[in-house]
Length: 265
Picture (tube, rainbow, N blue to C red):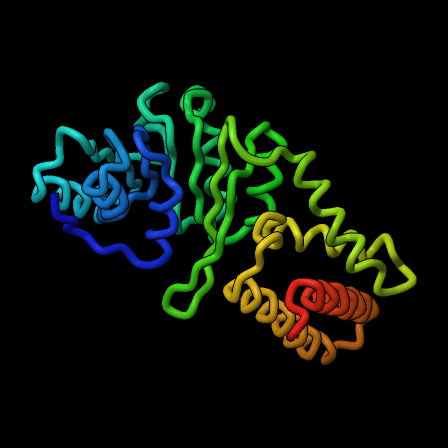
């Protein structure tokens, strides 16, 4: 079977994380290109493609119908997991939506989630919160990678019920970075708190094998801190001045982490 769709780097990475033989639920499917690609590459045995917006839903229906894939990819109109019944899918893909929205989708359908074994997520925002909450709920983090597309950096995460690292195991990995970076000021508790926050935000597994995309993301964050400080320095309010000091501390902590991750920078 010829592959009839081309995915960009972001969705290619999502597709690469989907286990073979999955019964897929693709939430926020848009044109349904991801499930089409996965079916044509023999990675899934069936799919339910869901979108809450009428335009993308109709586009997905058209894409599936034009390829005669209605028997294997069922397009449904609705919000999150609501159109899916418990046991219909064992793998979920959610890409290109906010991390908070993803967590709300999961929380709204516990019966469906109880039958899901794999989550492949590409959140845009609240990445650290997504990692922590899913790990606290008993999910394991199998892998995570960053990918560049059209000038932006995206993180893709794979959580599994059975394989990967538990929260406790990732916290042990994090200790290495806390030890290496150490205290960058007299307030060691604050510097450790800041570093812990950013380790979760960028991903403890991604830090294990840092690539160019992660370096770009971290250095962009440092520049964001600097621009924010310049804007805040226009105010003389005591509360603002305190926040400036916190941002300065964040820059010091992150720059020390960069030295550990990328010694040549």
